[in-house]
Image (tube, rainbow, N blue to C red):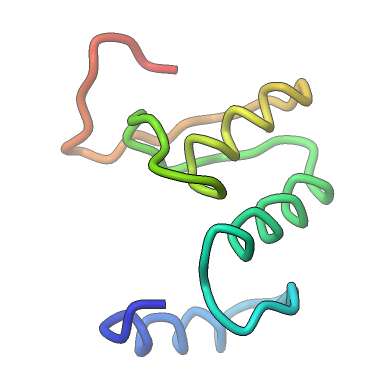
Length: 89
């Protein structure tokens, strides 16, 4: 987690109805992959806030959207206002 995100993280954590711990001490690709797998294994469909851009590494939004689609899940992409590309996924 970026230091300037700590306050927001704490607010979201306090508001969460359920918290799942993946066992990683630090954020990184492996931790994000584990979080994505935990989420995908417990849902039937997914909503993703995604700008449609390709991923920059393992565990990102592009990768979890692709994995959800590979599993046949319904995926709803919510496009940020400033996101633009020729074709939406």
